[in-house]
Length: 118
Image (cartoon, rainbow, N blue to C red; front, side):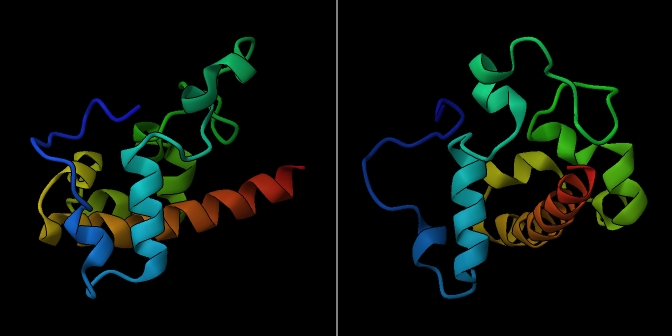
């Protein structure tokens, strides 16, 4: 789950200790960087029969799809207009801070919409 993280040594990532990141931003970044955020692709064994996004049903429910989901973009246009990309979760602190702010909005809205569906 952490194959995307490039590191030559074992140490705590800077964003976890950086005071510029709120605890919520750091927590979400950690979940996304380790592929532990609750989307179907990250837990594919549980969702073998239905991997589609619960909101738009047009693509696999993945972390990256959250930045492409038309339903989420309809509510949060800055997902596209900000220029922030999903890959920023693996970049340097300045880019990670930008993506963390968008991630919080995406995760909060997604949870509200999923709660409404249930």
